[in-house]
Length: 111
Image (cartoon, rainbow, N blue to C red; front, side, top):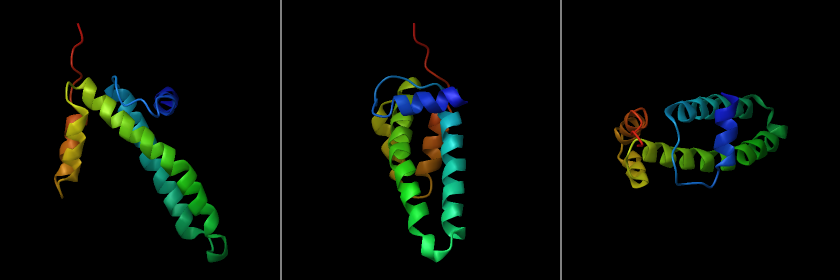
């Protein structure tokens, strides 16, 4: 798990290549849990200290979002699809679900 997260941050600006299904889902789980905890922290912090969690969220969130986008594109490449298909998530209601289904697909064989 830790290797998947570290590898994703190391490839922060690498939008080409491949990413395994395992690497993608471990990073996605990390992103979801850590983001939820940070947002929850922002809700329970007293108003006089509200700037602290917002700064932490931005400092963690910006590079993590870039890493997630790069990982999504590499994962799509691994399934044999173009990275441009990630724009399918812009379709209201069904786009995000459709993209997750594509990301969960089998890896393309490389001979």
